[in-house]
Image (tube, rainbow, N blue to C red; front, top):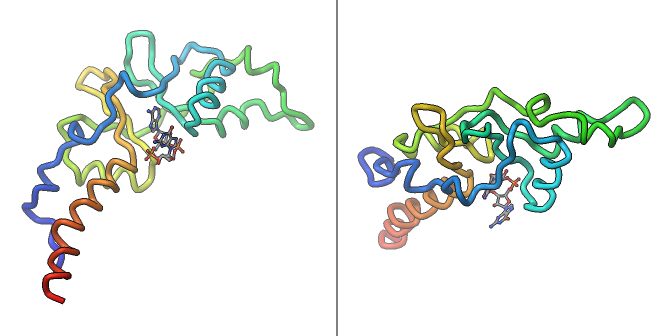
Amino acid sequence: MLSIQSTEIQQTKVKDLMIHAEKVANVQSQNPLEHALLVLVKTGYSAVPVLDSDFHFEGVISKTMIIESILGIERIEVEKLSNLRVKSVMEKEFPTLNKEDGFMQGLKVVVDHPFVCVVDEDGYFDGILTRRAILKRLNQYLHENFYQNEQSQG
Ligand code: 4BW
């Protein structure tokens, strides 16, 4: 039977898998929506973290949130893009991790979220843990510890 008890995967920490802050596209909460939409379209990401001017994590903004916020009854109110700020549209209730958290904590949160922000004790943004990084590590673990055993038995 496959057991994930006391294995090296349990010793893997969020800090071993995360994308560091300097490589993560982000926007500031005071930016106009127009800027956030430009960042999302240019980078190709569906959603990115929102930070304050001191690099504290504040929330997440997505293309869908932006489009919904400018939907009028009969038309898309494009002029709102320059009037509204990211802060008024972003999702604030978003789980976070600490870089010392373990693999299993990361696995649990990426079931419901494509990425999770990693913050320190003071709320400073350290980076993100993506679903891709978790799945890649899990895939490596399964191949090293499960499929190889199956092949040698068969
Ligand atoms: O530009 C890209 N490069 C690569 N190598 N893969 C990409 C890129 N854009 C999308 N992808 C792939 C990844 O597998 O599509 C998946 C979904 O992207 P998303 O959500 O809907 O834009 C990606 O899956 P993932 O790597 O597990 O990333 C999950 C989510 O994390 C992304 C995006 O919202 C966020 N993200 C990932 N890398 C980021 C980032 N946000 C800001 N900066 C980054 N560097």
